[in-house]
Image 1 (cartoon, rainbow, N blue to C red):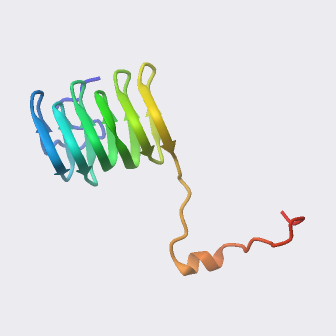
Image 2: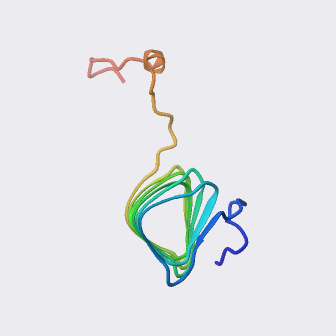
Image 3: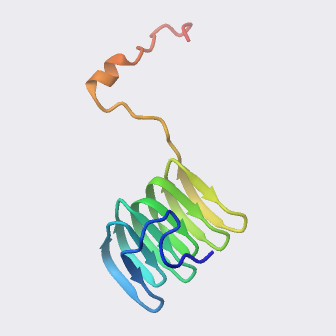
Length: 138
């Protein structure tokens, strides 16, 4: 699948790394960024990352959404969704509430999916039922 003119989620691309180009270090962007070259390092955004068919990302990814048609060798955290298309390859640890793996895609690694809200404030913790110390209790 080739994404041209924008990201699959409808965002306008505000960055592009073409085939034959390489970035080493940290990449930050706002809406959507397409990688057809190579990124070695960390990718951070609240937007969408598109790894094109010739794209390669190695290191760490922390974004809202990732669409992979190329190769990713990284620890990936996607706050909304990870989609691996039929030609995409992902090797590493991924964490996301929504994962789509198309027929023909490759995923090797570990996946953590958690949609449950985590208690973060003392008020939420107080509202949760206490666990019983009696082993016979459910």
